[in-house]
Image (cartoon, rainbow, N blue to C red; front, side):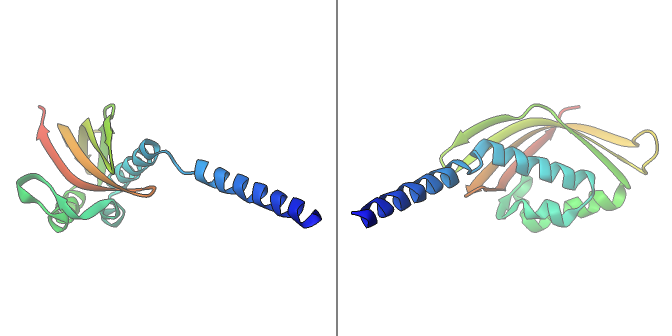
Length: 147
């Protein structure tokens, strides 16, 4: 009888632990926002490697741009600008099974790091994301100049 009570107590404790672990998983939208924030920081710090970490191997961009071309574009922009600023408007997130679509406005500035930027542009951006557990990767992006 004593071993039955011990077994029940163990099973109850184990079930509670599993429930707590399951509840500790980051909600999908929160994890996606974190990934977008990390990529935003990578742009501003001119870190091609960190930016590439969030881009899917099968990424498709404007004009058939693939992941390698996106990485090269980032490298070119980073080489031309000692300082890069990026301001993202509110994220319009549409979650769906296994992924999400995110639309936003992005203002990008660049220059030599002086007081004022030497160039700037505002873009309308649409991105598609794929979820893998708590991780998200950018699978497609389109952008158009707004100004």
